[in-house]
Image (cartoon, rainbow, N blue to C red; front, side):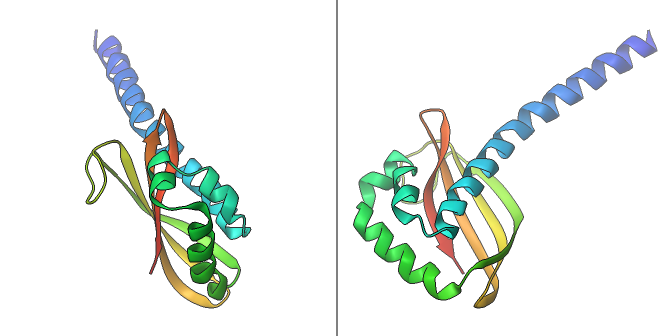
Length: 135
C-alpha cells in the first residue's frame, strides 16, 4: 500500500512539474530564438515574428530604426544568461492575456553589464515577442 501511494505521489509530482515547466521552456526558447534575430541584425525578421499586438503598435520600419539605434552601439553579443521568468495575465498598457516577462543577464562587446527584458505573449498558441528593453 505504501509503495503504491509513493508511486502515485511521484507520478503526480512529475506530472505537475512537467506541466509547469512546459510553458516556461516554450516561452524561453521562443524568446531566445527571437533574440537571435536581433543579435544577427535581422530586425525586419524580428518584427515579422513578433506578436500581433506588437506589430499593430510599432510599424516595421520604425522598429528597425529603433532597435538598430539601441543595439548597434552595444556591439556583438558575448553572453546571455537567463535571470528569471515571470508569468502574468495583466501588464500595464496592454490587454489582459498570457504573458511571460523574461530577463537575461547579458554581456555585449561594448557593454559589459546589461539586463535584457523581453516580454513574450501567447499569440494564437505561440509565444511571440511583445516588448523588448535593455538596461
